[in-house]
Image 1 (cartoon, one colour):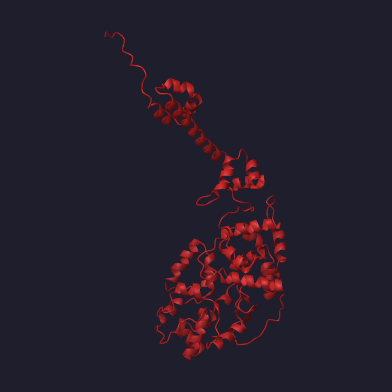
Image 2 (cartoon, rainbow, N blue to C red):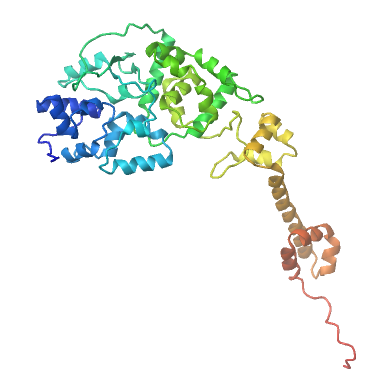
Length: 442
């Protein structure tokens, strides 16, 4: 099929989505729904892909790249902005490769971790925002922050978002109305939904979420709240029971009743204990639930920088020993290395002995070799210092005198650092003449 570039290419309107731009372009073209789909995406039914079009190669060609390349459009104008930070390294490489090609890609199915009950097929908008667009002399737009997983609240007008199921064969625009959702939210539920929407909006433009650090911070917080204990393994029923009593759980189920089936399972335990990457909505809801009571700013900042100064192990305790490429607290390291026993280390760090031993076992880290290496270095320095002192203070000291005066140090170096000992003793000149062979007549 011949690709014809568009004669007029409007710029983006604020934070509108790709679908919102397509709706405006459809009205500008004045053609049928199918003809607009063919002109913009090379497919008559393109109007169905409101979340993220699988034919971005065609779109970039007809717009001559003036609106950005495929990768930029996906991460700045579609709901993929909320999924990309959660992808594994191999998935991110594949995402970038496909975005730079013209290959047709079902983005949500391939990278969106799509789940029928979590990623609904509804468009969301705020009637006040639509009215504001009209007052600004522009057409109402679908705003990206309103379409992200968990974005159920308009932060600008502090009200729940309206919903539309785009089931009709049309390019639909938001309606200008002051309609309200019938569900009544109390102040705690409204606050929880606002925080969740703020978390969702903060994902746009982010490159990656440190899920390991996020998980550690959540476990630490749960331990502080008394939900989990370092002495007992995590309990899936207990965690689920705790979450069901939170404000975010109540508000989410009131907002979207279909979430009942998705949330009535052991998903909290799976996030905390399993390596599988879950849907972003679950991560956001769990973080918002665990840190209820914090300000919105603290909530968002903590999610993107879960622990800037301290790391946590899977039991919620402070991590004691360095892992590869981990920048730990030097004071903590010093306490552990100098402690006589694990009990002493646990007492000084205010953690349980069980936690210390469990971490050592899971991290395959043994304390004895670490302490032995440190002590060996200290013993080596002490032995060298003692021998150097004797050689410096007593001029003309012989090797025999060094052996006699520094017997323990010489013996230790002879066993562990023989080359170092030989090097030091070689600096002492011979004190007696060389013995002449038998039968020599001077």
